[in-house]
Amino acid sequence: MAVQTIVAAETNSPAPFGPAVALSCRECGERFPLSPVFACEACFGPLEVAYDLPSGDPEGLKKQIAAGPDNIWRYAPLLPVPADVTTKPNLNPGFTKLVKADNLARELGITGGLHIKDDSGNPTHSFKDRVVAIALEAARTFGLTTLSCSSTGNLAGAVGAAAARAGFRSCVFIPHDLEAGKVVMAAVYGGELVGIEGNYDDVNRFCSELIGDPIGEGWGFVNVNLRPYYGEGSKTLAYEICEQLGWRLPDNLVIPIASGSQLTKIDKGLQELIKLGLVEDKPYKIYGAQAEGCSPVSAAFKAGHDVVRPVKPDTIAKSLAIGNPADGPYVLDIARRTGGAVEDVNDEQIVDAIKLLARTEGIFAETAGGVTVGVLRKLIESGQLDPAAETVVLNTGDGLKTLDAVAPTTGPTATIRPTLDAFRAAGLAGS
Image 1 (cartoon, rainbow, N blue to C red):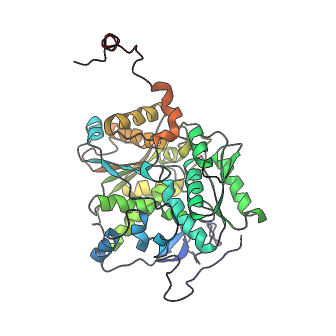
Image 2 (image 1 turned 60 degrees about the vertical axis):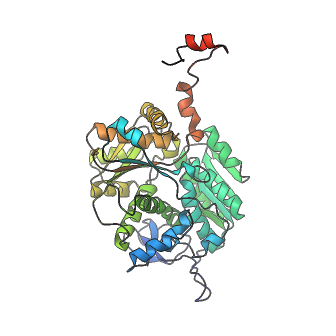
């Protein structure tokens, strides 16, 4: 794909990437112009967005944010988007609920306070709407015409919906054996949905080949050539959590790991808030959560390794089933730097945790949410997480997308004849 560098046509027009000034290699630090590329030409390391962020007036910036819309665009001054982003057709995700989970805290023995950041409230019911919204603005600026991705399900739906809203063509690629609910949700928006025989890593490899072929000319793969911009959407979770806590950092965060990008960008967002003076600088711990059937980062952390050995996924948590996570090594660095950990839970524990969260807080999480809550419980039981510290746990999607995980063990309490005697006989009348 031809690389384009975009600059504002006039000095009084909005900068197309707001405070973003370059792409920077996370390995060697080499800088490149803002363009639809994702790998360093010098060392092939991953690129991320570098900024010239506003500074010197944290209270003024807080007021500017508070005056913004109730979605991620309230943080436009900190994102690679133009100041007039709210005038363009977009799904406007974000500013989802931060639920004070007192019932779950009592169940788990947490005394320092527990919150669930519930991103199931986004337009397509997962956090992926955040990252796609940022990638869409980059695609729009670069003049791309087709929005695409490799996906374990949620991203496919988010891309399809965002493309439909913005008037883009969409063509997304998924493993052939995804949950039926996610397949339907990805297809309903009218774009092209292609099942690939294999797992997510096979899908991702195919997309990497497609992007280098003339067929891919004009395509914006949100998690490939637009990945540096896409990843920045996860920072908004950090911004929202701290703003919703009254502009302060939590002590602990428990975050699911698929590629690992969400976790690394949340840490990036927290560090930016500290540097800007929007929150007081204090220690915080980040914990990564994986499913046992796809836990290469957890295995590396426990073994003390700095590299992540790829695995073949085998878990009900298909949204986290990335056997070769691109950001795995960076997750290890963050967990160790902050004093956190990376842990995993098996499929049975995932289902139990989904039911626990639903029973205690009325939140029906998809399997990824079961992973984070299950890992939270395991971390407390093993003494790795201090129950007297304030903790935030992420639920990244809606349980209605993964009904198959809980359906075999969830159903009517009883089936009775429509009589009071039958109700009493079933032991359901109460005391």
